Length: 306
Image: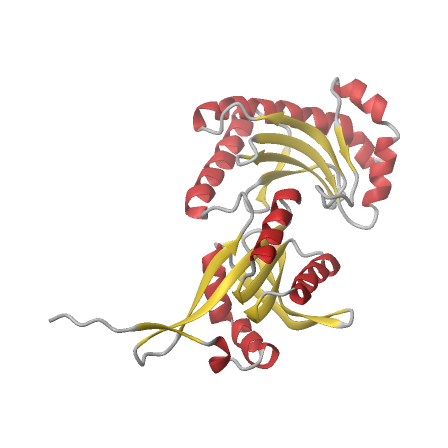
């Protein structure tokens, strides 16, 4: 007769009595960070544990190598509380992290709701994850950690589904540019395949980008500005807004950082997506290509003058 083992949950503190001295060092090991990364469809390069942030210390800081974003991980072996919620937000703000992962044994509804609210109201650049940690044991076997995603961004889906589609979209878009003898200088897809970058001028902190947000059902072309002179460059361009929009024959959206929906100053054009399916891709390619060329033409001389 077939016999089955008994599955049971182990108190986390039986294995890791203290978060800072026991659990954080364990999780910081590459093998264990990979366990967490696999659940979140990311790849982590560990940078530092117990990183000083003012008078506090961020448990783990790492790099998500799939999009080069900075990730902060906050650990809690008990139920979530307001103290750790405050730390999560403080670490994200002070370290300029794009992704925040809060690990806890249990999530109070008010805290998982808060993470979901942040995901709904922040730019796609910022992502907040709540991850429940359990230790599972069958009979007398070694306990096995189990990570379960409790809170996640609205557009977070399995990359086996979305990643393949995005890769194919940008690959086909690049083919479109080549076939149409585009003069644009492509740098390739970035930021979790959400946009495709293009060089403009010689300043590395200034570039053009084609965006496609399938979940939010729009696509866009933007001029992005980064670095310590970003605000200065933006202001100089904004002074020429009327002249620029007359040349391009369109009203642009000017977004000055910092704000709730952008992390760098940017200016560009947006269009609602008629259809997310591949049957409409050729129309999207045409619009992206046409308007990237327009942005490149109107901004190249101005960017070169900086």
